[in-house]
Image 1 (cartoon, rainbow, N blue to C red):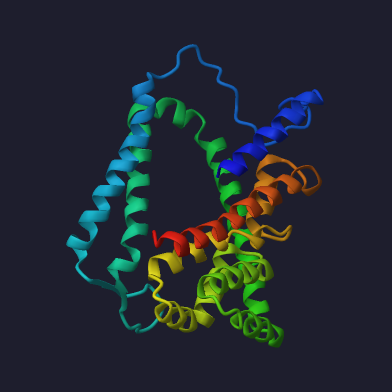
Image 2 (cartoon, rainbow, N blue to C red):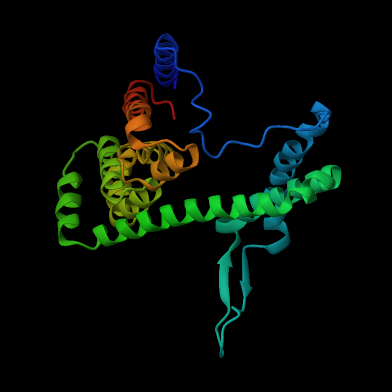
Amino acid sequence: MRRGSLRLEWRRRAAAGRGEGYGDPATLRNEPTPFAGSLLANPMLALLPLVVVAASNKLFTVLIPRWYGDSHSFVPAVVGDAAPVVQEVARVSAIWAVQGALLLGILTVMAFAWRPVIAGFAEGTRTAIGGALLAAMNTASEYGFGAVVAALPGFLIVANVLAAIPDPLVNDAITVTALAGITGSASGGMNIALAALAETFIANAEAAGIPMEVLHRVASMASGGMDTLPHNGAVITLLAVTGLTHRQAYADIFAITIIKTLAVFAIIGLFYATGWV
């Protein structure tokens, strides 16, 4: 993190030295509408929705398993007779808690600022739907691309070569980040790697006395490494939202994510040196 901040500061100073500012107002896109009112909300009131989201998320995380128990079933709304779908509450409680917390945060904003919200509801909804569809379609297309890659015969060759790395944590890190680069998706690469090699990872880690928490942490951090290649859905979405091109911004995106990935190997070294999880 520190090295990433140092690079960003170096790039900021270099841009300032060349006389660059925020950008040319004529070419800026997706900028927020300037505030045209005369009074700003009280700072405590402005922070209230964030506090409501944080507090209710914690509350729902505790209460949802108590309300629903270990599992929850429902009948899907499809034509014909359908068997009930059974969900393990432990797997979905975090998602339900976040959704409930965000809903309460929205209701809090509506309660205290319903007039300006209603006034800009149509335009705000159009912008929100456009942004959501952009992110969803980019990510979905890259995830589908990754699934196709994983089904190709060459994928097994790559997976077998990576599986030959002897150290469990280094194997975990390199395999996950390599597959994330191939699929163009951090989540896709990690899911494919764990689906195909989870038993091998676990067996090697247990043989070496490595806790599963360390194995998972390394895989999670490594997934954001080579998935930063230009075809990654998150990169494409980021550039679309900011109105920048690969030529303008990709070098810095690549550098920062590579620095983050290198931190994985620092964590591996720290674990082997100290045993800290």
